[in-house]
Image 1 (tube, rainbow, N blue to C red):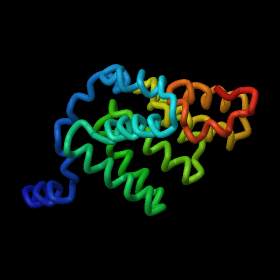
Image 2 (tube, rainbow, N blue to C red):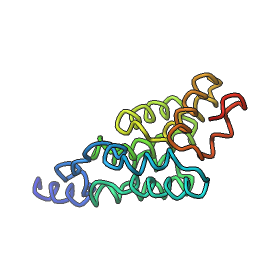
Image 3 (spheres, rainbow, N blue to C red):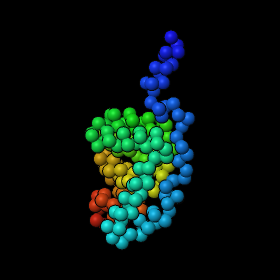
Image 4 (cartoon, rainbow, N blue to C red):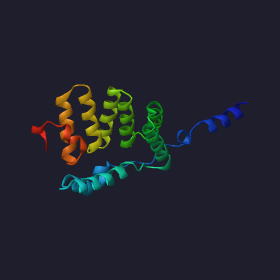
Length: 181
């Protein structure tokens, strides 16, 4: 009987839960890809900025191993389907499996924001920024969340920090005219 329960548990438990843990994430992307981040900051046209930002997004969305990638992809699909509760569940599994992968935290923050959990979103954004200090999207997300909470001074600082890294960031329009970079 116990043998059957163990076999059943193996089939019902997701593969990532059985794994030793996620592959080493390594240093933040902004350290590994410093020239790309530097060139993003120095862009002089919106098209060039968007091209470089897409390259960074592609790197952020490349998880450390296949199991983490599968969880990230499933979580993002659930966000796009507006199934925020399921997205949060899947992305929480990703964070448990791969706690040093910044994009897992960032995507769960986005799902929480869309689901109305602003405090949870801010917690996840803070963790994202701890793991990837130049995550301009997390900074912008933090700014949007703080704006929604009516905390304008902190929101504007977060947005200025994001625009300092990515000058063509769409959310720059939310800065007051005298604070545009």
